[in-house]
Length: 283
Image 1 (tube, rainbow, N blue to C red):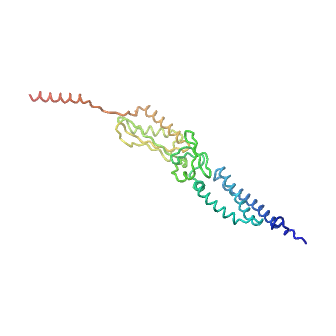
Image 2: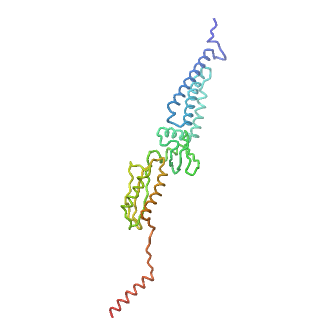
Image 3: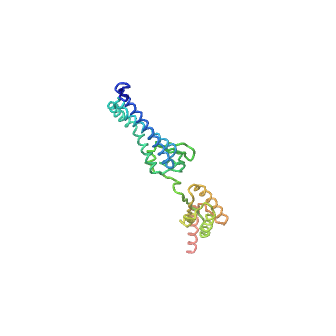
């Protein structure tokens, strides 16, 4: 009776060996697809879509690569020589790709820590703008004047990140100067009324208006207001103009810088007049 499983296909490779290879690769494809679907479902609300695709591909082809390496001895291909050559090549590539690996690891840490998201308004290492993309190796920002900036994830991870909308509310502050002759308490009441009437000025945390400094030319009032982060800048500019209009309509002026100038000739003439008066009384 002929042993079909032991029948050689080529060299020492038998039908049994081929069946083992086919079964192993088929099982690896099934496992890789299951892992790919599981990653997509578990990470779709955590990481950006383009990054999720990279994770899926890395997991899918990584499993297939492991399976292929596992079945190579089954068809007579031994990896001893390949491992030695691969080790040398790996060392060379390791030195050449330190920055790439560092960016990759930093990208993973950024996904875990999540200090920023796409659409956030940020300042990273002096680069300010809106985050447009976060990938495994880099973060892309559109600056306020529309310039595209690509930042390596290593730099992003090691820099101070200022996220302007990470918190739902944000505070802004003015310094409003009034004349010494104006009523500071009345000015404070007017400013508070303007703030209370603005639809986006928050009640909690409550706004603050108080005399902060007696300056050279004015009594300086400090105005602090909280607003939703998404509309923060618009509220800041709108309130500033409305406060200016309100205090001017009430007859309260914002003073200009003032200087008192003494002229040397007039001072000498005044001294001579005083001396003449004294001499006249003495005689």
